[in-house]
Image 1 (cartoon, rainbow, N blue to C red):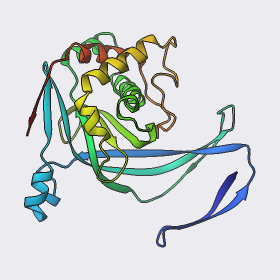
Image 2 (image 1 turned 45 degrees about the vertical axis):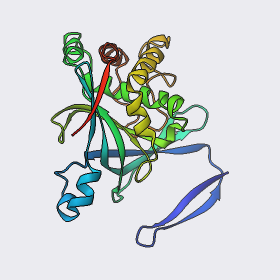
Image 3 (image 1 turned 120 degrees about the vertical axis):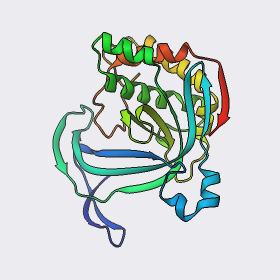
Image 4 (image 1 turned 30 degrees about the vertical axis):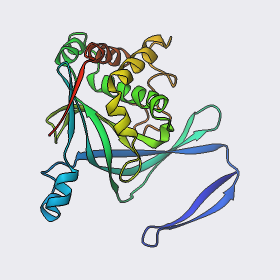
Length: 249
């Protein structure tokens, strides 16, 4: 059964819907921002003792590649939606939306990218951002095999420059307030996750990326940009670093 939203009352947190029969479905377009809730977070000044203890970031070094686990603030803003024809996925319409952002605290893992990988991608004139994005999608698709969860239980953000770290970063976070242990599991088995993600992309016979490897059915950016070859380079360099040592900052 399909329902069409006829009224949305943000103040009362209610929506009205009517049963309908249409040959399309909708897919949200959204922007997701993620901030690391470190000791510099504004809330730490208000709740100094307990929050400072909570916001310690765990870190481990995998032969020069640093992997982190900590609290993050995820903010998602829905900016519109697309109408897609059922079965064919043809886009038949697009509508803008003006909705307030939604934020929540949760747990995330994130990791640095090897300088050698960045240099190789630049030398090959590939899309670095597309490689990050493709790597993020594939890792999110593989992580449920280790964490016994659903893909929808996880979210991700990838960026060539993150304001809290000052460098390129890939984040994978629990899609539930407070976290439910998925990011922690990913942090623990990060080397295995990289290996499995590389295997998935490498063995997929497609040329530019497909739903079986680097495309995500719930990507708010319509799976753009994606660069499968750049993702392979990133994962090749990440998997050359397998010995991990844990610590805390």
